[in-house]
Image (cartoon, rainbow, N blue to C red):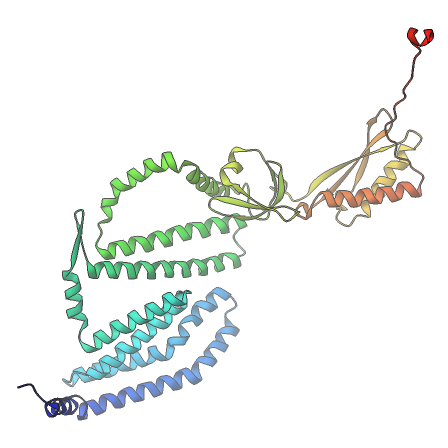
Length: 428
């Protein structure tokens, strides 16, 4: 005969009397309530003062972010510490604090969820991780985690000579996603620190960021694979095969990567430089692992492979010195005084805002042409990234106005055509 409602009712009453309606249970719940109240007061009144003090004391943005990140879980950590103290006292009194263990596990799960939410920007992924952590905490509280883990470990799949359990596969996928997200968050944090660091050159900043990314993501993948139980030494043969494949099929891609590292290491080209390569003149906007982004004055952004930067001739206008010299040719008629023209050219250049005063503009006589006296105006600028043609145009406008005011003419080529009488013309 199946037990009735009265049986189940008596079972519930008995469980309540054994687990809840006892002096020890009352003491545990009193400790839990006291710990929660203390944690609330600590977070409510202490955290704002601590945040304000850190904002005044720490100037570095990255360091300040690292210090303030755990403050959101400070109250929960305080409760966990208080719960552990109560658990220790209970064990000394030969009592198993069941409810304190459960409260401590749930608080730790909450701390893990809050910290992982800060590291994982993807909302869907962060919520999935939160659900998994809460599920693991509840299984731990209910005492079901150990049998479930043993059951999943018994379901194995052999891949080659490696046996992978279902538990190991789930743990590996979870750790892989988690480690990659943590690596991404740490990479962004390091990138912020590198950008705010004044002691690193632009090329060294990019190179350091790339090396940090490679190390973090490689470590994340290796950690995930080792947690599954995959023997990493078995990848030796596989890596050799991959090397052969890279040598044949991915030669261009990897040559661009290596070229990018060489460019950043020798500092021949770095972000902010004004370069000219393959008919493209512009400023290096960004440098990536595979290509460099060159922004021209007309708003076009050329993505030039790093290999071309090494194999082709590159003119770096700002490699060692940002000051560059421009030579502007000007022709005047033979009726003009070249000494006066020289003075007018130098005065016209000095009225241009972007022309440097030191070295000062100099005009010189370049030669005597077919229909003009050929002059050259040599000027210096320090902001080639702002354009070269526009500053030449401004100088030429000033020269035109100055020549008009002083009656200096600019000749144009003239040709004289003579028609000779031929014998046929005479017969006509």
